[in-house]
Image (tube, rainbow over all chains, first blue to last red; front, top):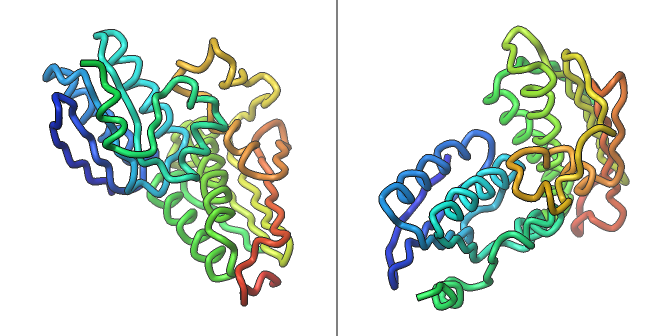
Length: 113
Length: 142
């Protein structure tokens, strides 16, 4: 089970995810992102501070969202990853693709105006 | 050694991985190592269910686990046609980074200490070595 809380701050949509991101929950998460992008939210910050587990389907979901946002000149940033989850991005070299910050406030400030 | 045959249903596989996680915790294995084993195990299970058994509910996935003081051995076998793991593209190459899939086996190989495919790719045997990873008071031996 996964819970998603949304907040808009400084014209950035913050996606706070709580729970595991795996093959069971990835479709729901993808659907939520697709919906907000369709509603013209193109600056998205994902806070993974309450995600303890993420698998290859979760990584695939973030790649899909990034690709989707790139097609509409959007921005995607990730923040508050646990050391182990950040490690998964590093092992798979996806840290080269994603903008990853340690803190939400720093990530928010880094969005292009 | 524990051996179980699991029906090809996602909720049962999730149950199996949670059960393994519980056993690893009981043995006093540190969280960082449990995370690696849990991810590796689930990737192997999902591969077996989706790519091996092609989501066929009449097929089964066989899981064997053996936990000793120094090692966790996990074996996952499906009833599919097998595959050649050498043919899998490297997902970390620049040209593959934006591909959505293809990271499951790569994660297994990097999170576990030893991963080998047998029986034409239908069976994967994974090892994690536990040297100095037990918490104080942990009981690693069978």
